[in-house]
Image 1 (spheres, rainbow, N blue to C red):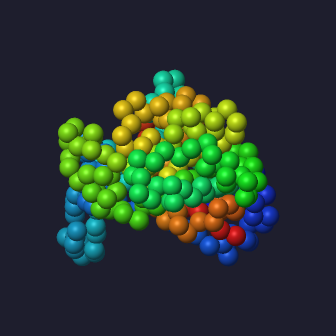
Image 2: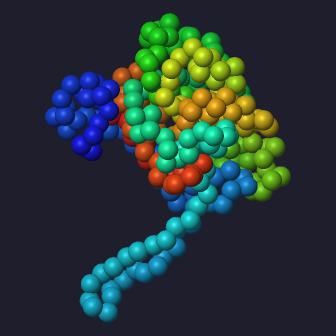
Image 3: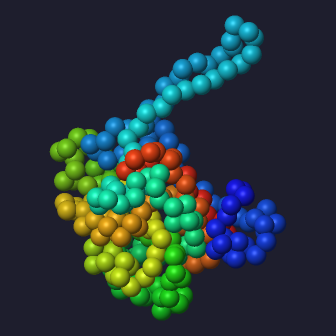
Length: 257
């Protein structure tokens, strides 16, 4: 663990020795040629630079990779949809670490690939678990993650190119619910198990605009949300630190007491 930890993490774990016994959940999909990207984005490519025995007799392996910022498990920095907000490298680390609340909307999404998470979904969660803690990381479990990496089921279409965008179908967060989170709850970040915080049929990406104008970053294509409890997990979500980037690959984990 890094030497500098947020105060909330220290309080959460009470002492560092508890970290050795914590259960860790990897919330990141591995990057490969199967990784899903927006239909108009360049996918992940891993190119072999050298693999084998060198002239000096030792084994050596090295690769180069390329990919769009937004694909696979990744961060959306606020600058992605809001001018004069944080770029990927400017987001304070403490905004990427915090206590998680997991909103389970699988029932609402079942049979409705275009479901948008409502204010009522958050209020129902709070009726059962109490008000969201300040500076929480909100994770939306839509059930869409079970389809990864089947593009047809996960994205709504396996087609590529601009003509595929209107065929996208997956759940997201309703703009009114995004505005409620900004105005009524002080959250640090939000994530979900779909390709976008806006639902697949969105054309204006209003939820992105609302959240990012308030400097609330988003985590998209989050894996293994079924392994987290409704509350009590601690999230560490560290993206590739791309200077002036609008996003980037994300390694996100959960610590369970």
